[in-house]
Length: 286
Length: 92
Image (spheres, rainbow over the protein chains, first blue to last red):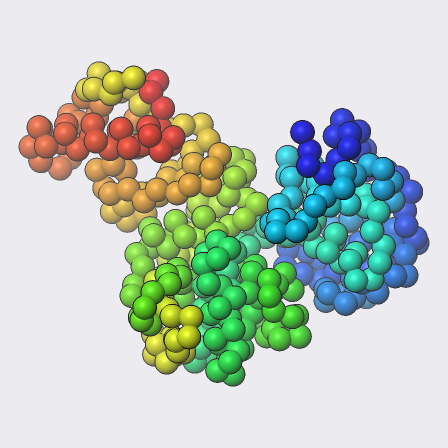
């Protein structure tokens, strides 16, 4: 039973439909590039507002965008509600969104075309897609906030409410560079920027990678302190904070092995912090 | 079901295990829960193939570690109950 679809049995079985337009853009993200086609001019502008683009030439993972009928979707009351996509194998369903994601290409069916909303539809497909493709390519998508202290990258991991945006805000207030406060990519030994933010605007983010120095578990407390986290506990943290792929049995061993590799490369730590504290000196000297 | 020395355990099909140094990490993918287990529990997981009993595992671990048989049996029964309760191991 879907919260979003009027008739789940009518979810598209084939990657076909009526495109919104004839435009194509290439979104340049880790795990990509992603070649998004079938777009209207307004949809192109919307993607450009949110994601880094490159010239629409050459290869890329193909994402075709098709029209959907408003009658396909149920009305959703969003007040006080946390948005969770429905993901079942290759099928992704959300508000005004159906998508089918295969290993070599994907298709999106949506009713959304406005400049201020369309990028959100694309991002809801790109997030799990980047997670899967990064893992396949040797990287990892992590639910965490990134920041730079003393020229070293720190990744603060945890579920919603752990304090990721708070730490990012504290870092910005102290003039430090930050990555996304929600999802970041680990590629090789570096944190690589992603525009998948929570509370932060994309313009606030660092645009260059930084060497990953420490993976940090967050713990709210009455004082600011940091202590080491063992390699197995760091592996546990990384797996728990690897969204989309950590519930996929087919990817489980790859994820576990990748988390071990990352945890052996970087340090692990637990940061206890106060909302109005000053953690920067602690992290600078860690 | 009661777990005793004749019980046979196996890793749940939706669980993944990896030894990390002297400890082990077990992921239950149906819930994205992760357990970090000590050396003895990691060895129990490695030895539990659905054929060996916990008693068989205790004998092998006793030979590896040289610890008292009664202590190992007590620890293994406790670990086995925790692994089954967490859904990462099942009774074969």
